[in-house]
Length: 247
Image (cartoon, rainbow, N blue to C red; front, side, top):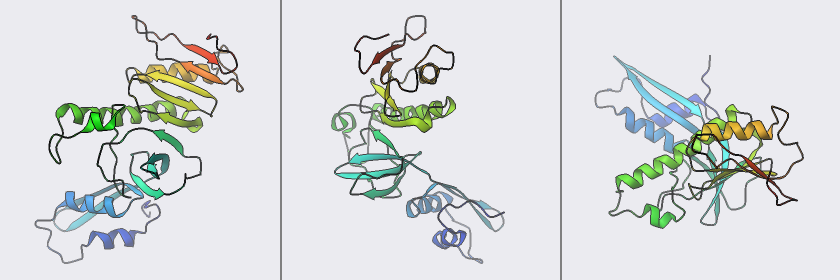
């Protein structure tokens, strides 16, 4: 069965690997070869090179799927779900991509083939200034990891609870004010990244009206599920667009 290599052929991938029958595998760096393939082939989210002794090289790949568009420094980046830059456009891309509103780590490359790190603060320069070139404090590194992890959690929960296909905007410019716009009509305020699974499950039950007491398909407004009470439950408030009184 041919491997699913996406837009690339097996021959392209093997040629870029630069390994031929008869080559000596002593000193062969699978880490370097994997990084080389990932950088050279933007539309692969995974490219893992392994060696099976005595003389076999195995390449495992996973094609990247266009998921996000993000505006950065006057250009538009098209990103995979793993935040890999697939291509750069001068005009806003079409095609049903989710608009990702987020800050990036200051100074990182946005060239195709690069995996991006999100900044956790509302001021990327303040949150991500590095004390020395190529270095960051443990707190900064943790913040960057938390922001990426929060996005992956949001995606997983939206998919699990039936909201991912309707998500049009995900806003993460302030990690204390996360939000998702559903079908361009219901803005879901999530607050912090705490208990995202519970908040999104609760929001999905209301938006999709799974219990008969939620929203209709024509309702527009803001659904706030960020207010978590002392007992761990969430008090949801919906503010219709045409009526500022929350319910």
